[in-house]
Image (cartoon, rainbow, N blue to C red; front, side, top):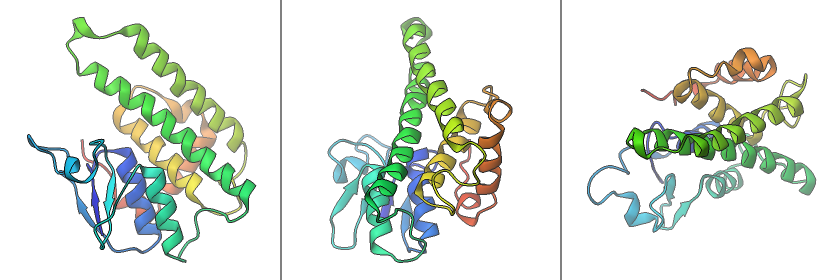
Amino acid sequence: MKLLGSVTSPFVRKVRIVLIEKHIDFELVGDAMTGDAPLIEKHNPLGKIPALVLDDGLTLFDSQVITEYLDAISPVGHLIPDNPRERAVVKRWEAMADGILDAGVAIVLEKRRPETEQSPAWMERQRGKMERGLAQMSKELGTRSWCTAEALNLSDLAAGSLLFWLDFRFPEWLWRQQYPNLNALANKLGQRKSFKETLPNP
């Protein structure tokens, strides 16, 4: 299978981390967004990354769809519980992490526009989403070692993808000092092979 995306995308990184944790072989196509006719548009009509091209030609897109599929096809390192409520809690954390990322990516893209065309008020609203989301994550994590269970699962991988992306794109935000429990979680995740091998380059 081929993973289409960008090495700096936190959504692509989340999928890469899951692939590594699940010991699933894949080929990364890291330049799927470049050029006048980006490769991604041939596989995802929405033109969004990540997209996972399966060996039979079917393309899956949206990182949450992809992570759920990957967990289902390999028994290694079960990341999403079978119990309906526990499953919903894990997927809720993934949605919260992705929602914070959506707001952050929106700010990054807005700042690339000419300064006279930027909307500070709109960016402030996006920042508010990020701050409220991270505060909720910290509150729910509390003193636990992992986000939603006694062992690592998808909620932790999604949270980690978010937290390291904040370091990458929002270095001025001292979230590690603000939320020591999230800092401890990130430090623990950062020691894993899956996180070390997917570090983005500026």
